[in-house]
Length: 99
Image (cartoon, rainbow, N blue to C red):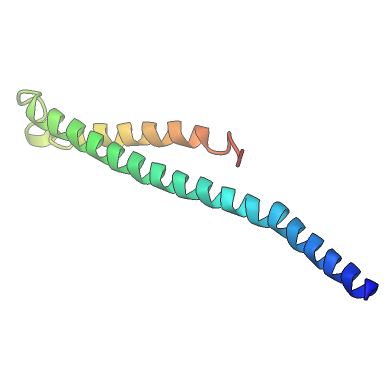
């Protein structure tokens, strides 16, 4: 009888340990990943809209400076701006962990 009680106590102790040391951190990591994913989607949508507005502004507000053979320059400027944004974002990768 005492042996069964000891075994049950050990099993309960192991279950409590697994809940504390495995399931708790996994829930925290899941929240971290979901918030990161939502933030990434919002950031991508925002950057795309800003780049499209930059392209549109360059095409309409430059009063013919980019007409004819120069019509590709606004696209190059928008791609350059996108490259700058990507470079800034890549510098931030890996700076923070799961804390």
